Structures are given as C-alpha cells and as structure tokens.
Length: 160
Image (cartoon, rainbow, N blue to C red; front, side, top):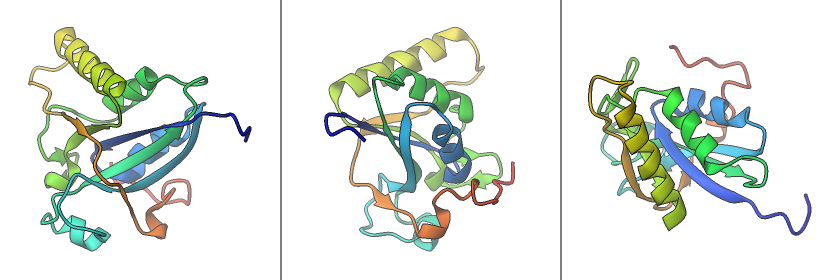
C-alpha cells in the first residue's frame, strides 16, 4: 500500500454479519472487512453475549475502503440491497435487536449521504412498509471472534 493512500471506514448492521461481510468484501475498492459488534452497552462482548440479546449490540460489518476507487454511496447501495430495511429487529430467520438495521456514521458527510439515500429509497416506493434503519454516530467497534471473520469465504453459509 502506498504511504499516501487515504482509506476510510464505514460500518453497517444488516442482520447476520456473515453474508453482509461477504457482499462488501467482494467490492472493488474495499480494502478489508471485519465483523463485530456495535451500538450496545457491554464492553468486549462475545458472540454468545450478543446472541443473548442483552448487550444492545448489533452484528456489524466494518469496512475499510479506498474512496478513490469506491464511493460511500456505492457502499450504501450495497447495504440497502443486502437486507430488508423495513423489518425491525429481524432479518430472515434471525430475530432480535442484534439483527437490526443500522448505518453507523463516522463523519457529517457519511451521515448526510446516509440520510439522503434513506430518503431516496423511501420515496422510490420499493417498500410498502416504512424503513426502520437507524442512522447513528459510530460508537466503539468490538471485533468478533476469529472464526467469524470471512466466514462465508471459509466455506460457511448464512442459512438464507
């Protein structure tokens, strides 16, 4: 990597993090992905803690990307197309607040672009129900255990 390369972070929660990570990992301009937990009140949570539903964390994918090769808007498009943003605390067979839809933003530009893309999607008429995706400042990211990282790439499946 060039020393002058400027990469940025983006974080998204859209249900089970395995499939969401895989969708972002394949995009040209994405430097790396990591799954973990954000948005809760428990420090250093484990997968078991988060699955219990009591930590307040959502399964999250943190994306490091090169904004010269991929736009934040393209990441937002991938996020919106990877899940159903109208179901609160549920994606497919997974139920609980840990599977909620969230865009965690790192700066005002990301916040503004996220709100704009959400409003555009709502106005499109694609969904009959309102979009329930939260758009909130990015809190601390806690990486998930190693066996969760690149799970699909390792041959695992998401179940839906």
